[in-house]
View 1 (cartoon, helix red, strand yellow):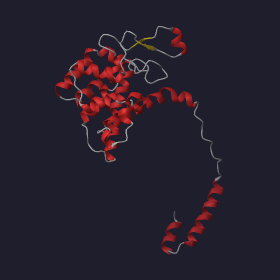
View 2 (view 1 turned 45 degrees about the vertical axis):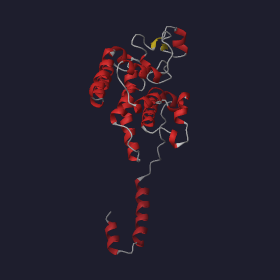
View 3 (view 1 turned 180 degrees about the horizontal axis):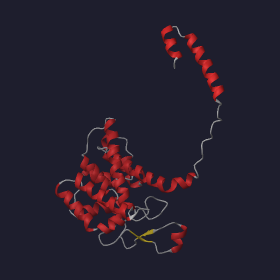
Length: 259
């Protein structure tokens, strides 16, 4: 869970990333869109069920910020391994910021609303439920629709990275990602960098929330029996004498006596 101060800090960092990386009129429009729905975005969960990741108020922005940080790091790794430069830093951050935007819902309806069924809350750990007033759309498609409808135009690279950010966890991505001909493979690694950043962030969030409980109490490493100083000094001295006798350099042997 996040404190109010943490939620506010995350929101400030989120807006700073837009200011820092998204340039010109597009950056202004993007920031205006998020500020228009500031309270909703700041308090959104990243998922509806506690078994998933960041299912708590403020979880969405916390997740997005982590994906942005991870994307910058993973981008460096790909470049160190010789990736050909096919996208800009702005495209990287724009894609990371907006990869899960579809979880917002529409400007009139939230995608996740509070779960009213107490049995589902208690037995299934569903803190939230899907808003059935929303017309069905995939998260990437809804996110892209929100951007376009607010006059915020993604580049082709950004559109593909947002659409494919779930990788092969989403069956509909197979035509793009399960191809063996060079001509039909993606022509930018941005898709893979954003996917890996999202995967890393979600996994870390899972580990922070669930892994300590699943691993159980930490086991202490058995301590070695304490050796008495007399035996230790005796054995060490004998070993040292043998080593000194084998040295062919008298000067070095003399030096080692004093160590």
